[in-house]
Length: 120
Image (tube, rainbow, N blue to C red; front, side, top):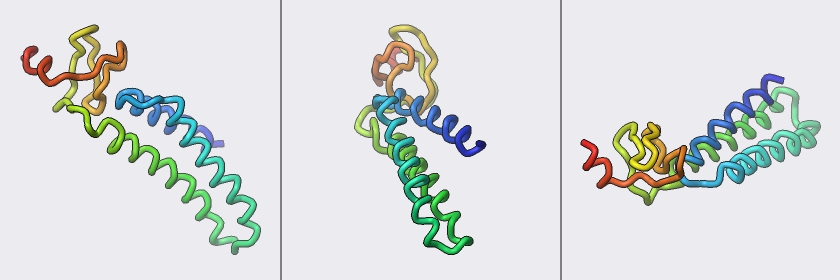
C-alpha cells in the first residue's frame, strides 16, 4: 500500500521535472511505471527460486529503476539548453519557475539568457 502511494508521489515529481526540462511528462511517467511494474511483478515470478533473505533485491531493483529514470530526466533531458542560475520569471507570463526548469511551466516558453540579463 505505501509502496504504491510512494510510487505515485515519486512519478508525479518525475513528471513535473520532465515537463520543466522539455520532455513529455506522460511518456516519462509511463516509462517509470512500466519499468517498475515489470521489475517488481516480473521479478515476483523469480522470487520463488530465491532464498527468502534475497527477495528484497527485487524491490530494491524496482526502486533503482525509478532512480535511473529520475536521474536521466534531471541530468540528460534538456542538457543542451541554456540554464538559469536560480529561480526565474518568464518574460511572457511572469510565472516564477524553479531553477531546474528550462521551459516555463505555465506557457511552455524556453528560458533565454538575454531575457535574464535584460530583467536585472
